[in-house]
Image 1 (tube, helix red, strand yellow):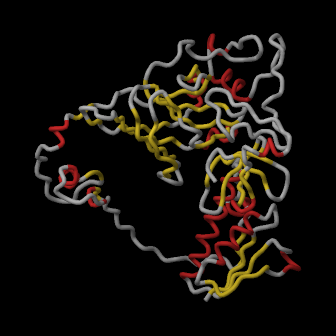
Image 2 (image 1 turned 90 degrees about the vertical axis):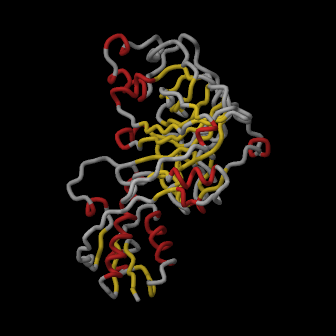
Image 3 (image 1 turned 45 degrees about the vertical axis):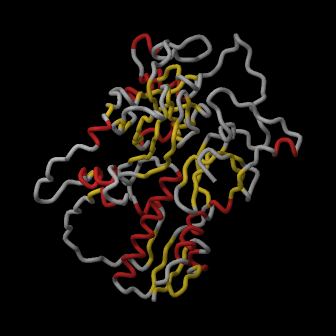
Length: 403
């Protein structure tokens, strides 16, 4: 199962697309391209492309830049073949268009006939490497890399948030004049909490006479500049929110420079990064290729504070974890917050030799309860766990006995 796959929930008829892989057991699914929910992998099944033929359903048609999994907004039948509205019919602006009008000023804020906002800059993008956010629906955007050059490009893609410095999501080779499938999905309603995209690019020419330096680009998104970045995207042939990644082209490195003697390394602790001497030895065949070429960053010593035992009944409801909080969080963010609090409380309970602890998770749709039970079943320090005091909590709490 990959990001972009069209899936169906086993417990119902809803269909959607996988927008994010949360961990080994949990995925995020956009239902009808309208809202996202966390779902256990075992509770969804990938919808095969041949299903339409077996059930007499018309196969969806994909336009330029579209791929399997993107037309997942039909929960019971495919809507990709619906007739387009008449040329003169007025169309209500989408949320993206409405926000663009607010964020823009001057002539850029004026709408064209039909409710559309004129793209910033009518001319197509020049040659280069681009990060494109392409509408899968009015609210859902797919993150795509576009290579509008004549060279192959090796790339990595990851995301960076305040809570998690970096998370690697994809790595592959992108051919010339080509685009990737969606590497991630972003929902407009979560704009304020979008992660920053971190992309590494290494141009490569077969039988070329030069190596190239690695390009690293961190792209954060701000409302003041995001909505004015919409313009025709190269290669995929559609409008997108477009960001150029190679404003400064990768510098060529002559092959003879790779074999030059590196200056002696200064004494004392080295900063994190590439060990030039070890890397040069590996490139020239004087040493086996191994991860030793990377110098690990010396972690600063942290004073060890006393571990505080959690309360005997630990409430995982959002209002208990963040009292007085008015920030609107997505279902995925709430689940991650609750699981982090559960893991922290469990580790503190074990460290302080508690005999038992009760986690109050509520009923809801059962996702949090199932994930907690899954983690408890794999922990060797747990004697047993069971539903706690049904007369008080129903099935909304779990009693955990510790060894």
